[in-house]
Image (cartoon, rainbow, N blue to C red; front, top):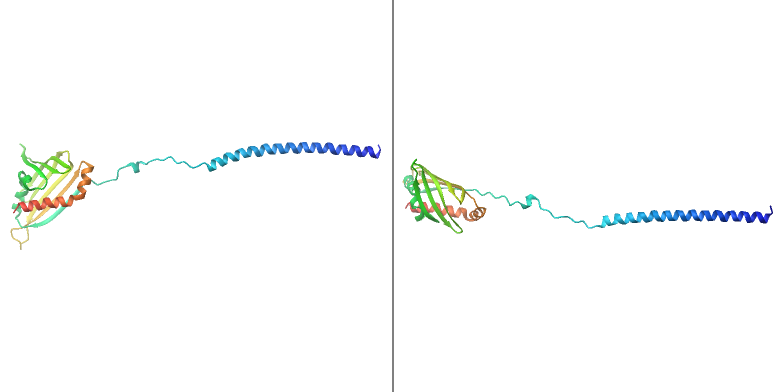
Length: 215
């Protein structure tokens, strides 16, 4: 084979090899393009998840919906030295029929006795916006104690009042020590909230009214 022929053959082999290399390279780039293209789709999806604004669904717990806890039962106690004998103060408190004449906000008062000897007091009070009637059972310890417990009515779920009287100091003859206690709970939450605003003032006025009526 001549030198010229050998050179032509060698060049043809090189060109054929270059064509195969180019085709292989093109196939690789297409595969790479498809690969990166699919990765681009996935990356795009990931980006959409990453940048999606966080939306929180509003909700309320049972605690936030619950009304604030309120202690409805209220108590008041007071001790006074009174310039009246225990018998005098006892008679004033025991005379329920007279309450409407001097007890603040008492509109009607009536004492009733049952055949078995129990004593009941029916009172009607009017203190805007409250106007109700209720019945209490009364027990007596002559010249010493009077206790009344509400037995029915739409106003109170609990009501108890206790008066106690004892002889006063020796240097104050004709006096007595008077102890007053009241505990009550309204059935209505609104009434409880209203009462909490002026409870002490109302009770003090009632205690003073009994003392003044003994004069």
